[in-house]
Image 1 (cartoon, rainbow, N blue to C red):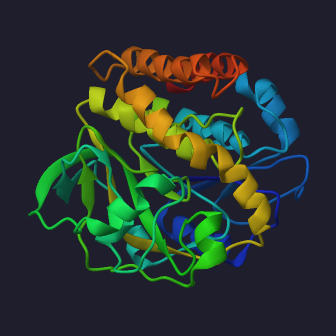
Image 2 (cartoon, helix red, strand yellow):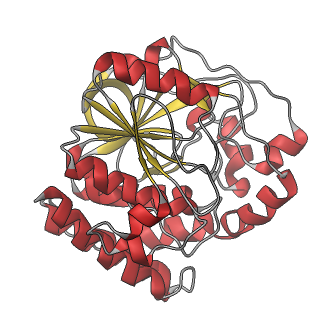
Length: 337
């Protein structure tokens, strides 16, 4: 059974109708976290809608500690899905419609092209010849990334506890790209997945991303950073923790199509400035941490806390973030019980 999690302030979109129909046909569930601004109900057959007042009444501390009118209310959707027996969690946004490929069975072990190069790797180069990069990729490394050839190694069976699927037409790129380059973009659907080895970094987003149970602790989205960085900074922490689990992150070709909600691109740019300035510094900070190998939930939780504590010490997040991380970990233990 597939569990999909979103948060939204809009009534059901055409994309979510398609997603709901597919989930209903397969016995899946769509967890929808509402907010103060938004519909009082979400009338799709697969939807499990939770209003802000219902969230506040949940047995999870985060329901009362997370900021309102904020994307990170999505954290509660993860917890509810886990509490109700989720085996695989896919997160997306309400402007992403699944394609036929989205419904293919998901397995933690994938046949993928391994990338062992340390440092940044522009994965979009493996699926497109366009001069394109994922949101969160450091601008100082763009020129180098386009000089590097795409991955050409053979396929290797690799455990990837987090798997990012791409989205066609209006993929996840930053405001600089949107202000200066052309869309739509289509990725190569025949290109096999790519798996990033230890020390190889690429930002992943929250728009078409699969998590398997051992990686549940890494779902946590931080609240005390900009909206455009919450999933990106989460992705850096998650990658660092995955390596201690002897697992990795993979990217696969397009399995969704994004019909993007209206955005103010200059506001997006403003909210991406912390990433433009600090993402390389975050990589260096996390790479330098000494974490504990293992995949017991307590071990992963300790590594997660160590990563966020390092970001707090560096002044990139306030200390209040650590209280939310601790609440997340207690709530996750409750959801898994």
